[in-house]
Image (cartoon, rainbow over all chains, first blue to last red; front, side, top):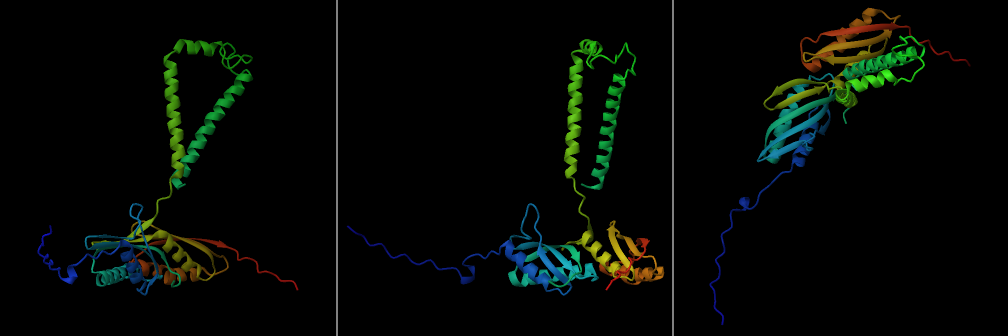
Length: 117
Length: 193
């Protein structure tokens, strides 16, 4: 014996921009930060800096990111000014490209001088 | 190995050497009969009746004392071994610290840049630079040509090398000490055709 069940009414879908979640990996943030840092004219070289307990140069937690960079800067460019410009540029670039709030950019100038690489 | 470890090693080696010298010297003196013969006779074994009597008299607490001394020596030796791995602390200068992050400067990089800057000066054969302290000071060691006028070198330092350091650190005042040694210029190569 068969009985007919009434057809299920389709559940209305949420609006398209709410279907799913976007996550941006630490690695990606680190890469964008390195590229942005390389765009500052006085910067001669950039590499991401991990820590012994956090090998990535960047950490993302709930829409906030922190970045650590090792840079080589032209000599004798004023290091505090270059660092400030670098920080500002990296923050701006990350915020426009990923929408993350960058709370901290730690910079270590590991070397000065040398040709642009 | 850092400077502190090196000093510790010199002290440790000195003390061990002193102890061994004293022990060896007294064994030699005993063999040559320099000690009173009723106390340590030259022609007997080292562990003679006197020594056996001493341990028999002081037993058993002497063994506990010896064990304790051995443990102390072992602990000191182990510590001496472990400090060999101690590295020179990484020198870094904090350029600025704000809520948006800190900026550090590794001293090695700027040391090399300053040294290269000084070496570019007239009649400088070799230069080494060290940035020290949190309010940075520059220590320079310069090897220069003894035939060259000194004021050329000081002018190069005060108009090129040191202003560059001040610019890079963005400070109005960076004290500097330069130790200059003068050497004869290397003899020109004579080519015989």
